[in-house]
Length: 453
Image 1 (cartoon, one colour):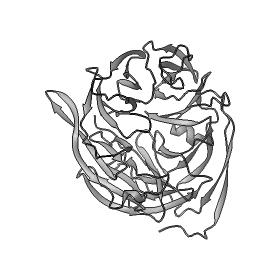
Image 2 (cartoon, helix red, strand yellow):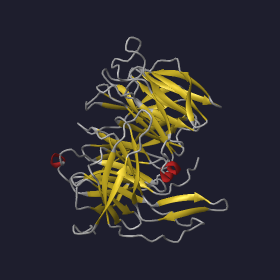
Image 3 (cartoon, helix red, strand yellow):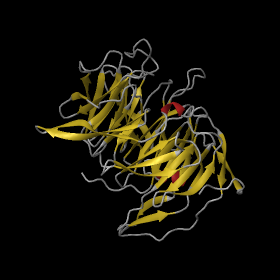
Image 4 (spheres, one colour):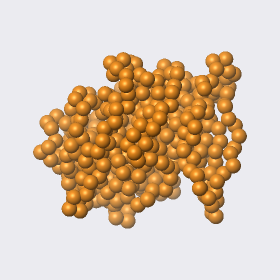
């Protein structure tokens, strides 16, 4: 049930933490009275894994709501000062990340589920969600990358105010402790960039002078720099010497990091802290005017999935990137006519890759092995709405998230005001969570399961 409009409000003053190279800011957030507050008994033997929680932002009411996926019930609703421009999960899936790009702030919502290592057992916590009095600030927070319990926030900076780009790296433990000065890098110029955290290393985009860059758009970097953590500070070790024009998008798995370029992808390999790079050039299959600008990786997949597109264009292509063979291959995803991709990602165990489009379809790709080589192929297409697409509320679209301890995907439908639950084992719509507001974005929070390699 929805929280009554006449409930009491608890005012939380959210104070911005000022970091080097980032402007200070303050945000006021109001919290609705929690529905639950008790701590549940914990199952140390993990015979039952909690299904997790779902965070949904309201497109019109400037609030974030949290649902219990054990019974799909509403737990808490929090009033926000503005509708977040983006919603993500933290590296450990304990926190929802509420991004206000225009306001230069990143706020955090504790989902209430997390796990601690007590040496002889893993201790599960199940508590009421809460908005944190903790804020990261920086100019134009844009790209959010998580890997191995680390979250890298890339701030683009701003040319008009001569504010340079920067990167902040935090763990869930840092967020819980309210670390005032997290690990960071400050650049000397603004850029639309990205950073990939990798143990004690950080690989970040590097923008050269306009006269030197190979990028058609100079705001986009064209090189990758490698940083190493020493005494809590990142120090630049090297700049990889292979250019990646119009660098945009990155992903990594156990052995490789891949960056998107206008002429292909930059494949970076690590061997005991030593990084080498090579270029995989675009194949003839890449259509004129498209470039790879989004890449997706998973620790259970040796291959990457890459999206080639043009800014604002409807024409897109999907490619698999095979680091072992240094090859890319076109994926026949059998797109629906006029479909624009609005969300995508690997399932929990990387057994599927889902593509959600603006026509209300989820296209499922699965790996298929031929002569010892894995190829990603079309498997199924699910129609997740019965509504007229033309009635989509302004400023909204379908959104997608995945359980990280079970084989479920969740799609928010702003037209029907519901969240469709997809059983990925059966490739079938399981049930739906009915809402009485228009959902904008969703993300899964909870205790992630161990991956089976």
